[in-house]
Length: 478
Image 1 (cartoon, helix red, strand yellow):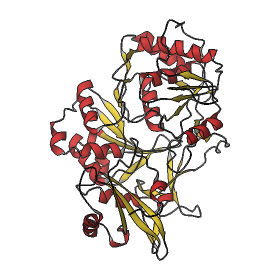
Image 2 (cartoon, rainbow, N blue to C red; image 1 turned 135 degrees about the vertical axis):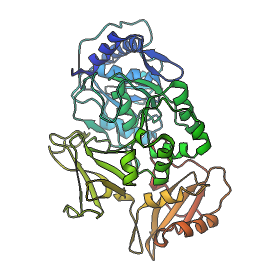
Image 3 (tube, one colour; image 1 turned 135 degrees about the horizontal axis):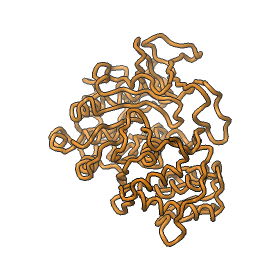
Image 4 (cartoon, one colour; image 1 turned 180 degrees about the vertical axis):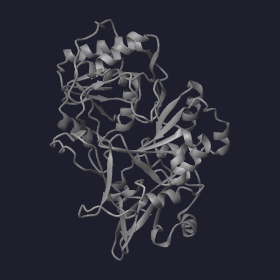
């Protein structure tokens, strides 16, 4: 039965107070203990001036304290607004100026903002009784990735209500022990972790993603479900076939991947490891305005597809004039769900009901309605009149045995308009640009080959697979 998120947590605690709710490796809370701490923390928020529908910004890593502060915001009738602790001060202040939160819950004081300490959130001997029921008109307000500038705040139009006995989505098992390896301040990890928690999941929080530790945690904690992004998948696949064959992952019911185009060789490695029936891919956005889904078994029949629309979603592909394209023709991917919009950008009007929403991706539909992504529209490189999609080149370059990851960008060129630059992370390997160029000559189509190389020994993407491409589009340093 649908109820407030606040009452859903209370109900789960009443049913089974001794069942694990969340564990970050240092602190373990049962459902009962989570109820006690979040009730205390919610009272602290109310005493600090939080009112119904106010924003509570939570600046935290993957810790129990972050979860407690978030649940407390729901119990106080507020809208939790997760924010990265690694966000540059300038971007953080810009987001906070827009949000104007009633309170910021953070590891340290935030200048010119009312704040509460994140560490030990809800500890102590305060009143832990159940609070009066309250529910905000929006259940979350995460930010966009900010990969192209200051993050946008995406406010859900769905209220803070949930059915604790209903599955989060048809592709997510109920009663799962969920491994949360992506940062909770990113939209997808936040949504799946928190929706899971309020519908009976046990959360195992990884402090940050590490490939070998992810595999070991599945075995050690008997994890049954988890969400990953292609960057994580690539790093796990790079552990090698022998490592993966010896890993005990029998407890895994399934794995969901989301967030970016997955290189085909990485997807094949995972299907070979876990089997096609334990892998599900979803394409969506922070805005939650629609989604597509594909199983591993379907993907083997349509490699590269991100699936067909589900959950009432309609997908279309249009040209620059908003005219629908024919099957197989690349255009702008747009999603729609019937009824009111599922989001609004803070500071902007809510989109119209039944509207089409463009996430900035390019792709095409096949004759059976399966969607194939090309790349981000803003990332398209036009070199000598030829369109080059960075994701396609990156997926090939990352099959090089020494390449840990890469980012392909276009840089200004007086002759070609743009030339293709490849920034290649080779970890500790001793590989130069000449060797990479020779390899690319055998594996990459001539018009797509990088004309400029930058070899680095640093991780290029964060744990959610995001990268600030603008950093690598500046004047050549090579």
